[in-house]
Length: 242
Ligand SMILES: [Mg+2]
Image 1: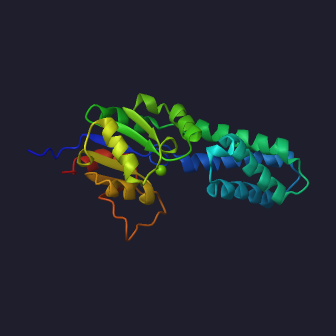
Image 2: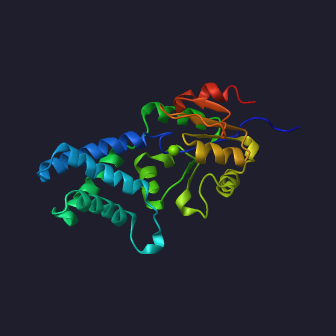
Image 3: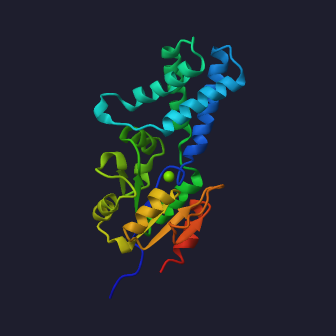
């Protein structure tokens, strides 16, 4: 007889289990304070510098074959924004200081809450758990480390280390293989309709659970099986999955 039970849960990391966006905002505020004490400029200029960095980060297309590390590339994001906004400021040292402060402030806040940790511990008594995170290897591995993910998951798969990332079916198949399960045994949980939910649907998992953030719009095209406002609602959803 076909087994219809769920055997494994695949989780996204950023903005699903940890508040990456919130941590990024706080980190930018810290850099803003540093800039305020360093440069003789008004708040609007500081905001322009920080927004410039954010935009550069958003447009980032990291290629490890370029010979630059992700730290070097992101330091350059700050230098570029500083140079464009305040033409005569000492961008090299300041850009590096901004990047180090942004990175350390952000990482410090990228921990899973006690509630999320308890949820994962409980789920792990019943299911295999796999963390599937897109992104550049070093950046994602640092997050995995500071949030102690290795203690909570059976396996961790980082998109940047694979040929294709979410929503490609190949990376989901890799996860099924690592876990020793079929697509139909799995539930995919994540905040991104484009990568987590679209990928889970294409890979034909049993159910997709969209962690919908405040202000996010639903899609007419990508339809998750379940929508929650917090990952903490997962036990209620899992009780409904058939
Ligand atoms: Mg995410």
